[in-house]
Image (cartoon, rainbow, N blue to C red; front, top):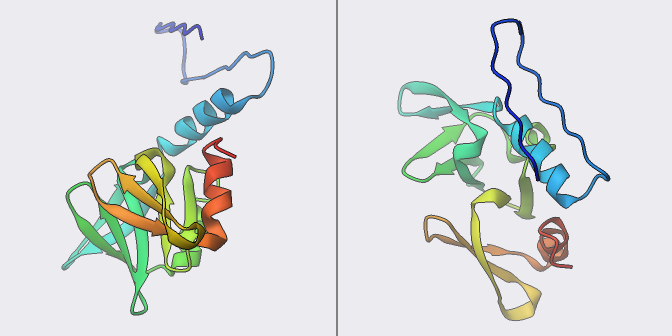
Length: 146
């Protein structure tokens, strides 16, 4: 892959052009990363509201009718339902892995087969979450392992 950067005052806007022989997995990942750069979701922690960059999210979980957003160091709450956040992050590197959990696949460190076709996912922070059987094939497909 060749990367060319041209910085000059003559440009009014930033423009990214991708030239490739075909649309393959590498190109698709590159596009997803660029789309994710400006993606933010509103979250709360105590009385404060934050705009959280989607790329910092490890996973999102629904527990007792509340939606929690987990990052490397913090836990936030969202007023959105899990399916609403899933819809917002649809074109980014997020994937539903169970009825109550959505994971940022860029934060996955490793996978391990578990009982009953479930998958145990270890995230980059060392935390482990379970992918249900219903979503395990989709995760493998999205990661190019199927």
